Image (cartoon, rainbow over all chains, first blue to last red; front, side, top):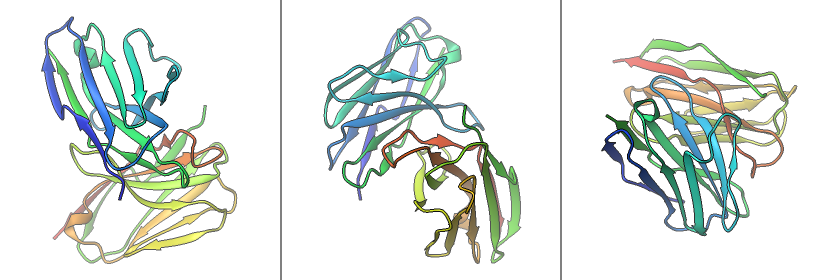
Length: 115
Length: 112
């Protein structure tokens, strides 16, 4: 089946620094990728929709200047958390959409801890 | 906005028992999805439903797309310890290319 990877799987950073998370579709091309955030014991909340070659579409309440998304190729989307603060600590999960069938496959997630 | 509700919120069952969980929505969805998430991992798709009334099975799992398009259920038969996890229902409004909206999840614990 389709495989989506994320890197890093976990990251710890100091408050005020920026962190980049990569999402890759390993064996298929994804024109659309989605970024989610999940706080402990809660559901996945969609942050933004990332389309290859165009600007991401952000959900209401998500700051686009804080969560920078770049979908530079059909297999890679990146999420950069800028000037991270402890409240940004969360589990960030991406999904990639296959063409044709339109199935979304999820990555394994990235655990971000901001000290 | 669209909101999904899942019941029960959590359940503890004996190994071998059957499990049933529900999902309801305030809006009509054209696609219903059921995912399982293990701790520290991303969700894994279990079953996808594309037509109202559709009943689909995947091994010991069976899910149905409600006729009203506002609900779905998931049944797990003869539960085993590895069924432990969080089960999320999710919906897509128009097509399978749309963003996925997740329910709050049902936590399942299986007692050996």
